[in-house]
Image 1 (cartoon, rainbow, N blue to C red):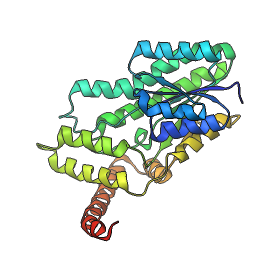
Image 2: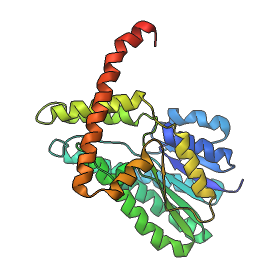
Image 3: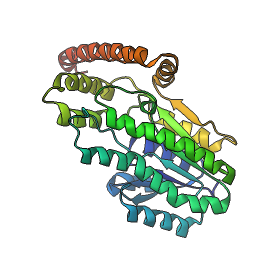
Image 4: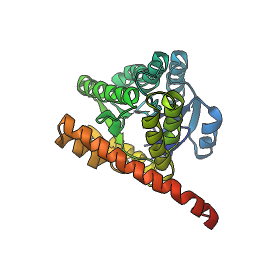
Length: 293
C-alpha cells in the first residue's frame, strides 16, 4: 500500500484527524489538510504530511493538488471531510452566512473533486469519499441551511458516482450520526448568536440545550467514521453509503418508513425528549460539581 496516496480535508481534529491517522496506519501516504497549520503539525510525528489550506480558497486548493502530484505522482483517495454547521432560523440567517455554509460544505468539496479527477482519470482509478451526515436525509427546525448543504452533498455524490463509474472512479458517502467532536458546541454557538433573541429565541434555547448535551453526552467516537472510510477504500466494490455512529441507522430507517407529516411528528417528539434529557443534565451539574464529577 506504500504507493497509495490520500488527501483528507478538515483534518485538524475529530473525524478528519481520526481518518488521516487510520489511512496512515493502513500504509497510505496521507496529506492532512486544514486551515490552521498548528492543529495539524503534530500529525507529522507519525509520517502524515500536514498542509495548510482553506477549502474555500481556490488558489490554495490548486497548490495543494499540485504539491501532492509533484511529491507523490498520484492521488488514490480524496476524503472530503471539511465542513461546519450553521444553525438559525431562515428568517434570521444572513444570506452571506448561508453562502459561506454552501462554500465550505458543498462548493469546496466539489472544487477539490474537480482538481483531483484529471489525475484519477489518467490512472483509471480513484475513490472519492464524501463525509455527509444523517442530516443529508433528515431535517429539523433551525437547521435549514446546514441540512440544505448536506442534501446537496448527497445529490452531488449520487450524480458523480454514476458519471465517474465508467472511468474506474468510485464515489462513496459516509453518513455519521452522533459523533463526539467539536461540532455540537460550534453549531450551538452559531444558533444562539443568530436566533438567540427575537421570535425564535425559545426554539433556539431548546435546541442549544440539546447541542450542549450532545457535546458532553453519549456519542460514538470519531474512529467509527474513520473505520467506515477504511472499509470504503479497501472494498473492491464499496457500498454507496455507510451510515455510522450513534442513532444513524435508526433515524434513517424512520425517515424511510414515515411520511413527511409522520416524520415531522417524530422529530418534534424526539426534540421534546432531548430537551427533557438536557434539563435533567443541567440539574445534575451542581451535584456533580460537589461530588467532583
